[in-house]
Amino acid sequence: MGYLLDTNIVSAIFKNNQKVIIKLDSLRTQQEKVFMSAMTYYEIERGLLAVNATKKLKNLETLANEYQVLLLDDMAIFQKASKIYADLKQRGLPIQDADIFIASTAIIHDLIVVSDDSDLSRITGLKLENWLTDE
Image (cartoon, rainbow, N blue to C red; front, side):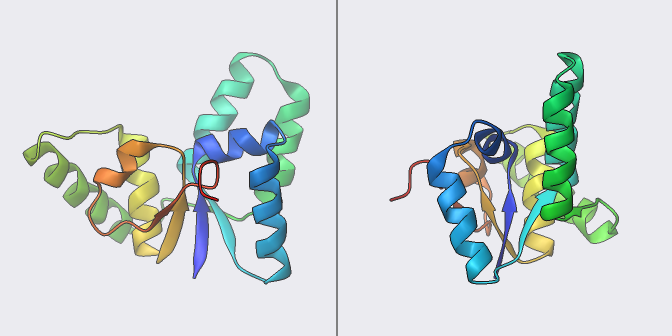
């Protein structure tokens, strides 16, 4: 089983959150796979570019090399995202498209999403962990 880092977890890495750093170090020693979604990369990069955070942009590149970025290059991801969107809309529980794409990427790749976003708990069939609150 592998892990997919959500945007708020990548932000926590940039803030040197020790809970997240320790968990990542533990997974590294266990040789567990950890990935970043292309949507997470996009959300982080656009924010850093908007404030001209050049040092953090270099850190993002380093992170992207360490935790492979999973691209939205499979129609199955888009089909799953469409189903998630329709399900949430029918239930009156819409969430942001970026979160839907992160979730669909995780489901298609059979990964656990690591996030501090409670909206993701609305998605049926999504495996979710929160390293910021989990003990």
